[in-house]
Image (cartoon, rainbow, N blue to C red; front, side, top):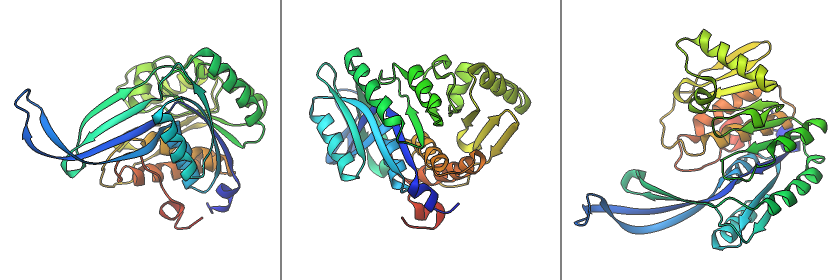
Length: 311
């Protein structure tokens, strides 16, 4: 697929945003206080995370993207806004005085080995979520596809209404799910659980045939057009009414799987918004996943890496 279709695409990303912080340092000894390494701090780095990383991936492919979410009135919220502005992402970030912006702090040792992760998060208030829903209704009309990125932080409390509003407007809705209850995603166009998320909802299996039966049963129960199960080193499998499509993973050296699901759904959203059919979008998203896991931390894929073209 040529890149022109993606350049014309307009994608609305809604969900839980966060600030990914990285502290880098060397380890030269073990602490005398506890059997843990002592990290000598060297430098730090910040990147958009969660739904913000999805938006960042959409923008990196050349599509027009709008991000709708909630942050706290705090330093991480200001940092996240500045990062998004730097990457020219149109961000509608509502402020909630009662919450802290979600931060994932990763301590990185030698050879980019992750030693520790600390999460800071508080769910947004219902008042802010209601105001975000009103904003969402206005933004849906101007997009070609909606991506709902659920990280279980409370930013998608009204996701069932969001799906209904977008579908009534004739927009495809892609959901990156969270948790073990997918009923809230009923009626979406496409849901993209990873293998563990799918197993928690559909149950275990002993064969590919049994996996397909579980997936098609779940797809019908949720009234979704398609279900894409991302399977790590085994690639990804798309389940539709007409059958299944399995795309093997492209063999690459894996550096970091952080944010790989964000890249997958961002690529799918940009491709579908640009006019691609679903099987084509899945194949390209699989290629994008193979590229991004070879990079450190939450990262993006460029059009040149994906298509051999530049924006």
